[in-house]
Amino acid sequence: MTTEATQTDERAGGTTHAGLQAWVDEVAAMTTPDRIEWVTGSDAEWTRLTDKLVEAGTFIRLDESKKPNSFYAASDPSDVARVEDRTFICSVDEKDAGPTNNWMDPNEMKDLMRGLYKGCMKGRTMYVIPFVMGHLNAENPMFGVEITDSEYVVASMRVMARCGVNVLRRIEELGDKANYVPALHSVGAPLAEGQEDVPWPCNPEKYIVQFPEERTIWSYGSGYGGNALLGKKCYSLRIASVMARDEGWLAEHMLILKLISPEQQVYYIAAAFPSACGKTNLAMLAPTVPGWKVETLGDDIAWMRFGEDGRLYAVNPEFGFFGVAPGTNEHTNPNAMKTINKGNSVFTNVALTDDDDVWWEGLENTPAHATSWKKQDWTPESDELSSHPNSRYCTPIEQCDILAEEYYDPKGVPISAIFFGGRRKTTVPLVTESRDWVHGTFMGATLSSETTAAATGEVGVVRRDPMAMLPFIGYNAGDYFQHWINVGKDADATKLPKIFYVNWFRRDDEGDFLWPGFGENSRVLKWAIERIEGKAAAVETPIGHVPTPESLDTDGLDMTPEQVEAALEVDVEEWKAEIPQIEEWFAKFGDTLPTQLRVELDGLKARLGAE
Ligand code: GTP
Ligand code: SPV
Ligand code: MN
Image (cartoon, rainbow, N blue to C red; front, side):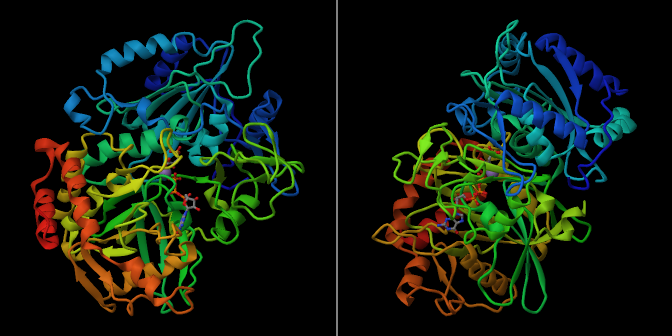
């Protein structure tokens, strides 16, 4: 096992922290579990949990020689992704949830959910998971305590966050000064006396609820991903974005990477793309441009605060990768492949091969036969996919060979560039540089993308996904835009990251991707850095600065000059057609829309000659 996760196996029955103990007692009284266990983070505990999951049929142990200490799981077919229509921001005032979130009065929601939670852990073990997002030795450790009745969640949380007795001891030492986010989770499937369990307990009725004023989380009914691993989206984005607004920092849906130039100059880049739009892939990029190197710091979440030198520093609060499996292979993401092949991982909703390994669409060595995520026979001739499009690997970040050493620095890394990007077949060019922070904020606020399988609902529909945070902003999105503008206003403009807008997903007339993507995206990173260094040329267009065809390094790239031009093209007519959609989007915000964004839109319209 990994170093930080290895802890002593003290199966402590409680805590000396009175407030925490009182909350645990209160939850136990409501949910009436058969047993309570405090999660320690020890190796012995991992063995106990995974043995229990194998026995329950939730886990299948993979072949030790292929994926050591690793497990396969298939969820209930109704519980496969985040449920955005069941996700609520229960602020006291409805206006504080804004036009993009579901809202219910917090007291009403609590009454409703107390009804659901009543006796909901009967026949199960209630686990108490003390965890910290970010570093335990941070100036202000960001504690959480998740209560859950799912062993699958405990095993996954142990991979994704720093958990266990070390965290609990620190909370106890700090006493009243320890701020922790109480996060309650239940699959909502109590067991009657003698009732046999199913491999994936869950409930058709689901609620994923954040109470921003109290900074608490209540989740019910789902056992999967961001619905259930509450340190991730619920805490590190929805609750943390509220903390960040109050305290002057940013909690964002961003990867963090370290880029090293042939001259050994180091740059750190953060990038926000909506779910299943390429963060994990870019975070672990294997550059095709000679001499450039990438190391990774994180693939999903960045917390950014100003340092004493006035620069914006980013920290990855997570401890693992919860990555989209389909499409991951030796070509698209060799570093992810190496990481998961070391083992200690959980694979959910992929296919199980006959020799106890995992497989998914896009992976090499297609098996002649496998068992699909729906537990059906699968062959390459099958009409159905072997793996759910949102199937995932859950693997420790410390196993990643290209993990940057700065990952361990609680101060984080100074960000030089922020990329916003989405999945757009048309209109949005490969890369556009913003003129300044406010223009960059406008790019982020109007970011659009086709929906993916990472959330339930229709796939491929273009929607606005501001800063790739649409499902994760814990308050009014209009206020969130204002917060972004304020962050820039109070800063030294020369020290702020430069903001770029990218699109790896533009298509040609035949419907094929115009840009090869993956490792080739290093060409765009290089251009961005050369812009920052004042070395690369750009064309000024109505939407911002795009590369001249010569300024983008296309050496050895398998594309015709016409194709490169098509990838970079700014089509004024397409952009004019975009304007009414942006107008409609902005209209949602009424008087909470910052004036500066309205001014940006008017400027864009004037430059396009649009009315
Ligand atoms: P979340 O974990 O849901 O937040 O997603 P993510 O942003 O980390 O997405 P990820 O990197 O896992 O990519 C999801 C899908 O996008 C996979 O199917 C990838 O193969 C595909 N993808 C990633 N990068 C590229 C690219 O540069 N070009 C193309 N065409 N596809 C890409
Ligand atoms: C996402 O949907 O953006 C994810 C997966 O990273 S989940 O943890 O389910 O939110
Ligand atoms: Mn994500």
